Amino acid sequence: MIAGSIAGSIEHMAMYPVDTLKTRIQAIGSCSAQSAGLRQALGSILKVEGPAGLYRGIGAMGLGAGPAHAVYFSVYEMCKETFSHGDPSNSGAHAVSGVFATVASDAVITPMDVVKQRLQLQSSPYKGVVDCVRRVLVEEGIGAFYASYRTTVVMNAPFTAVHFATYEATKKGLLEVSPETANDENLLVHATAGAAAGALAAVVTTPLDVVKTQLQCQGVCGCDRFSSSSIQDVIGSIVKKNGYVGLMRGWIPRMLFHAPAAAICWSTYEASKTFFQKLNESNSNSSVT
Image (cartoon, rainbow, N blue to C red):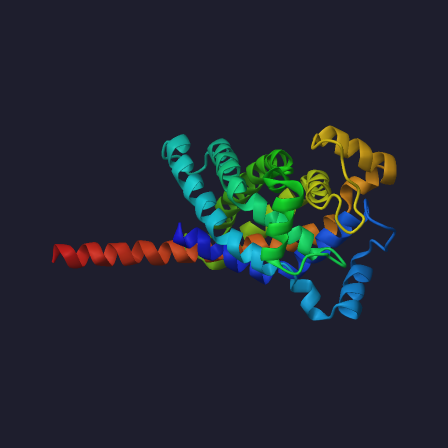
């Protein structure tokens, strides 16, 4: 849990500016007319808000990322051990374990993700994390924090399945290609496998991420408000307003976020896990002697 918490926090803090760009671009489809390009979005933030604008709402992610990733990796490890039956190449077990992990962790992080995304919007009406939480509770009720939970799970289940299966398969392939570096502690292997897994999973699930963003930001800064949180209804609204291309809005910053983020997360997680395993072994040996 500690290893997962460290990995998740470092991943999200390091890549937060790219996440802000993704949120702005995806929300544009239901907000007032703005340029949706990556370069334009970055230029607008730097010109109007300065570099600090790229980090608005980072406090919410700081509060949510640690606990959510602690749950995420803990559930994954337990399920992987249960479903794989000792077979390290069982991709199906890795995928199923990833799905269980994301359902549990999303329940923890979704409220803070709602706060984060609302604070990331241009001209956000909230003063900060506490103000956003208070106003959402008073004006919309606690249900607003989980309006996108179903969409988040539906998105993250295939995302995590693809992510974990690709990560484990890529890691296994890299170790087989270079037997001389066949060391499970090789950070380069973890980083490369993580980047490949993150990029592929990000692109595949972008449409559902657009739905999630618009549900979380509805009614804020001119964004459309939806009559229900039905994924089908929101997709229909997006297609009607922006065409099918609207469902892929923000795929470039999303991929640019998840590829290095996954590389950072997996290498940090594996390094932290190895550290604690060695520490436990050292303490066990000391107790025996």
